[in-house]
Length: 107
Image 1 (cartoon, rainbow, N blue to C red):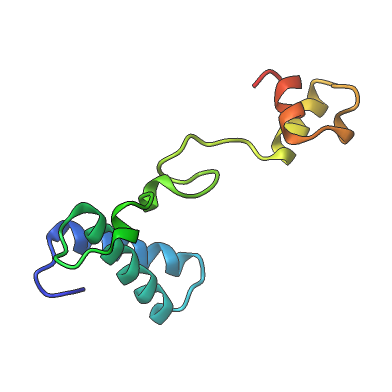
Image 2: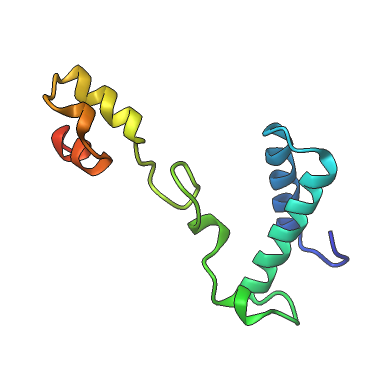
């Protein structure tokens, strides 16, 4: 962490680092991921004096990502929709796309 970091950013750094290590990332790589993410968030929020326009106008890390990301509602995968369709005995489910399966099971 950089000198003068707020307690919030220190907690954020530790949380990101621990999460990365739980996913099997080495400690060195986890520290790098955490430091880069916290730095980017500091730039976006105006806490940094040298914020890049790229960071300031980019989506926040919390709003980026796929299913299960902190900023978005969880969406079922195609396999989950397929299993739901199988349980409901939907005909033709094996040839359906994810959006077709979602409509067929009423999502």
